Length: 145
Image 1 (cartoon, rainbow, N blue to C red):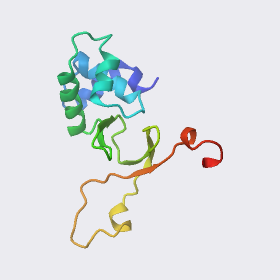
Image 2: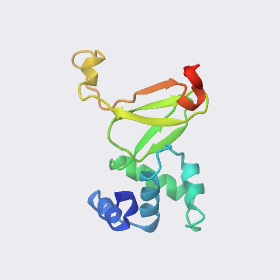
Image 3: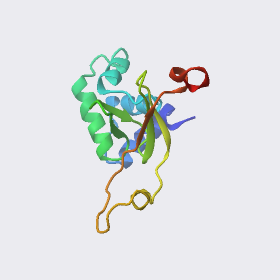
């Protein structure tokens, strides 16, 4: 059983990060961890609202903000300024299809990325955001056209 399927494991993870495992937090974390589409706040709200009628967009926003601050999730800003959320919080790259807009996870970022890209001496990188753009397999069609 994956952690996102086990409410007790989720409650333990939230407690370990200093968060009270409220119903909305458990539901949002489980849904986010089980979803790889990098949803927006509104998409998460619409997906969870039928089973959680008292859930508000503000609650989703506040919960996601707390998750990002505690390393439980990552915020991914796309080139058009849209903010999406990723249940995979460790540093990794993304691929964004320029045709359909799908945002997909790629592999982890190398620990020496700042050196590899030539970060000037004396500077310190606190975060990295690497996104590759192009067409996904479905949009590229046969032969990658």
